[in-house]
Image 1 (cartoon, rainbow, N blue to C red):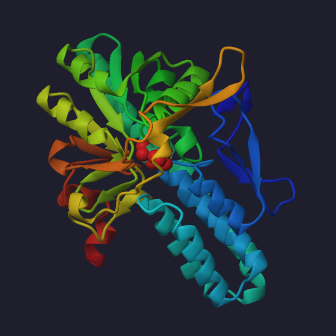
Image 2 (image 1 turned 90 degrees about the vertical axis):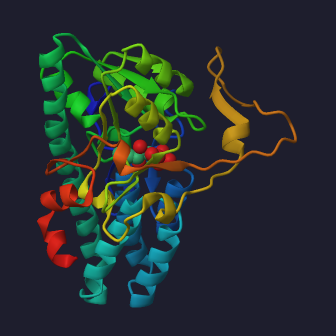
Length: 365
Ligand code: MRU
């Protein structure tokens, strides 16, 4: 996607050909800054502190982190310890474990002296595949928006939660890819952007992306979605996912479940858009089985933003001394999900629907 007319991906090889550069998402939307990750530890820190975030991008960054680790220690023990450090940075997004598992499994068959170069190439392949998956998700989801527009004969209002755009992937995004696809095809789309407390990925990142791309949008407080749905102002919800079970339960940013409930109550289609790397084929009950990251309570008790004079400020918004809780994700049961938009097409949110798109998993089961 373009920033000031220059095409960027969220992660790319630095000019030294060894380290990687990422967009520092903690500085957006007010400052666009690149950050160089030159060691495994720097990659792990970037994931943990959410310099990079979003399930697919976390996975790609972890893969590059493992490649960087191979320059420090390319032994089998080095693969294990780097995978453990990177794998512990964020527990919910399955893409992290998927990417580490893929690189590590291939690395073990490679001679030690060639592992650093091999891992770097494999990380780059994962990044390219992510771009292609997201582009295809955009095409499949874009058709849903075009069809809605054809039926209703007016601009389509989409509600989305958190940021599942190009900043959360390598390019294009998942939930936002259908919106970009439709917008580019001339289908009139307007997006209601949930602010997404506590970290405000919607207000800061999704709004920044849609602004940059010229897609009409309105940022709303998280609690406004149900009201808008009751009043016919939302035609469709599309969200991303950090982990989706083999049975179609969708784990995504905290607050997604409430939007799905409101959509269900108002007969509004609710889609999750995700690449294959987000499906956890080992799980069948998302509510019981998906580990939910609990993040620092300061994300709830404090807000960081820009003052009118351009300087940054962090302020406390919770009564001093009150305990806070900060579960970062929730699970939307499959029964509330109209469909899952993947790079292979749109599946019903159930085991059979997903297996029909990924028949190779049927054999593995
Ligand atoms: O905590 P974050 O910002 O990493 O959470 C991101 C989300 O929940 C996204 O919706 C999800 O990763 C899908 S990204 C394409």
